[in-house]
Image 1 (tube, helix red, strand yellow):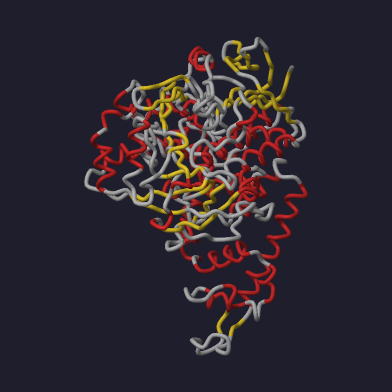
Image 2 (cartoon, rainbow, N blue to C red; image 1 turned 60 degrees about the vertical axis):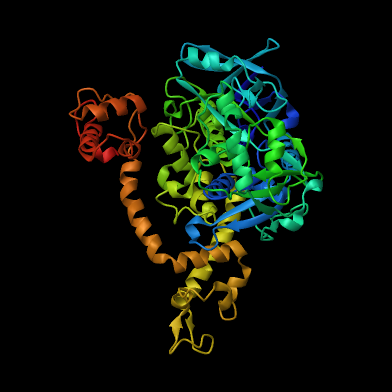
Length: 614
C-alpha cells in the first residue's frame, strides 16, 4: 500500500488534514485506532470562543470542515464579548457531542481520494532523516510520500484520578506507543504536558430553579459555505462555587493527581482545574460554572470550569456544595491525562519538521490545547503535505494574514512553557483579522493555489460584489434630515453610519442593495465604516511589517561569522526562522542584528547585492 499523504490520528487536526489533502488531489489515508471516535469532543462539546472563532472561520475560508459541521450540529450558540469592540467578538456554539462526530465522519467518508483505516500505528518508516511511511502493530508497513502526525494526547498517554493511573490516550482508549521512541531516534526534542476534564453529571439530578439560564443568539453561522441548520436547542445554565466548595478542595488538595501521583504538572494556564484555582486565587470563593449540555439525546451535562482529578467520592462532595447541585450524581468522573509532545520550534511554518523530510506535525503533539487550534494546524499541515507529495511549492498563512498565521508563527518561534491556547490579544492585527471577514481575507489566496475550487471562489466573488455595491452606495448617497432628525443638512450615508446609534439596517429604505446582504455581511460593512480610522492605523502597521515578513531566510543560511550579538546568534541558530519577520520577534534579536542579516540576504553567498530579486 502506498499513498501521497498518510494522516495518523482522526481528531480535529487529523480530520482537517486528511480532508484538505484529498481535496487537493492527493491519494490520502487517514488512520485511527478507533473509527467510532473520529472527531470526538473529549472535553467540553463546544466550538468557537475568543481567538478560536477567528480560527474556525479561517479554516472555513480555506475549505475546511469545522464550521460546516458545527452549523449542522450545534444546540446552543451565542456571541461573546458583545459589550466590547468588534475585534474581540466571538461566536461560540454548544454542539451535540454525538452528532458532530457523526456528521464529520459522513463527510470524510464521501471525500474523493480519501481512505479511512482502523489500525494502531506504533512506529515510523524512515531512512536517516527522511520519513516514508508508518508501521502498524499488526505488522503492516504502509508507505507514503508524506506523513502527518496528529496524535493528540495519545503519545504515551496516561490518565489519572488522584494517585490512581493507567495508560490511556483518553478514558477507555489505548495510548499510542512506539511513535515517541522513533521521534527521539530521529532527533526530536520532546516534552510532556497535561490536560484535564470535568466530571459529567446527570441533568435529572440538577435543580435548575437555582441556576441562571444563559442567553442564546439564534441563527449564528460558523461557515460561509452552508447556512446553519441546527438539530434542536438545549439551554446552558450557570451556577457558582462558594466558600464551602473551595474549602473542601483545599482540604483535599494533596489528593489531586498533580500532587498524589507522578503526573507532570505542566498544564493549560487558561483552563485551570478547580484545584489550581484554589491555589492561585486563595481569596476567591465564587467561580462561575457553566452547565453545558452534551447532546440532545443524553442527560449528560458538562460543568465547564470544574476540571478536577480528586478521588471520585470527593468529586461528588465538591459538586454537591454548589447551589442547584445538592443532589447531583456523577455519570463519568473527571480525570487528567499527561502525554508526550514535540517542541514546535523544530518545525517550519509549513508544519514540516526542519530536520526530518516529509514529516508534518499538527495539533496537541505540538503543545497546543483546544479543538480549534488543532484543526487550524491540521488544515495547514494537510495542504502542505499534499502539495509536497504532488511536487508543488508550499502554502503558508503568515502572521500578518490571519490568526492561523499568528498561531503557527508563535509555535515555531517561541519556547512553550505550557500548552498553547489562541487568544485574541495574541494578534496585533485583531481589528483586521476578525471572524466576520475571514473569507474576504483568505479566499483569493486559497483559490490561487487550488485550495478553493473555481465554483467556491465564484460564490465568494458574487457575494463580495454585492458588499462592494453597498460600500459604493454609502459613499454616493446623501441622507437628508427627513430620515435622521439629528441632521441639519444632507450628509453622505457613510458619515451617518459612523454614529454609534445608527446601523446599516436603518438605511435599507434608501439603499435597497443592503437588503440582499446576510446579517454577517451587513455586520462587516458596518464595522468597516464605523472603525475606519482604527483599521487604517492597523493597515499602516501591516504594510510596514509585510516588508520584513515576506523576506525569506533559507534554512541553510549561515549566521556564523556575521557581526551579530552572541545572544542573537544562539537563538537564530536554534530556531532557524523562516522569514525576517519571524527573526524580528525572537527574544534577544535586535534591530542591529536584523540589519546585518538583511544585508547578508541581499548580497547572498556570492557577496553580490540581490535586493532586486527580493
